[in-house]
Length: 188
Image 1: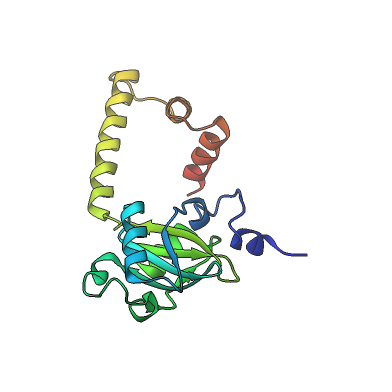
Image 2: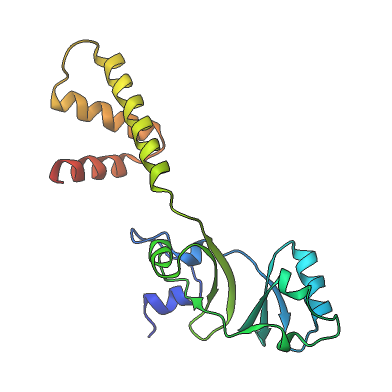
């Protein structure tokens, strides 16, 4: 009997706290069969609006080529002569965080465990300065809301926790998520 990782490796839906998983963010990618020409690849890229084409053989990812690389080649030239062979691929069961650490920013191919192409996922640069600015803005807003709610008096710990719980729920968290978050704050 296959396990959860094998289930996920075929891009089947999963739930859990480890994610988000790469398989949940896979997007279609332009493809051509291994016997295609440069003209076929250009046409596929134009139709898709993409700048990356994956070369497949019976659904298996065997190569890739960037759109700008095709400009240097004649239309009748076989795609096999132009492509970069055997691109690196990732499984849908990999977390987005792990892919960002391992593969870095950019577009990454996602395949099943037996090499069948599912699509691609794009990892964007993680901007720590942006996160810091957002944290400062959120903290400033939170402090203003606390001041507005309690005025000049110091709220008790229970009042403050109740206020934070209400705010988390009003921002779209479930009551269970809010309670878990507040519990982790208390133990952390």
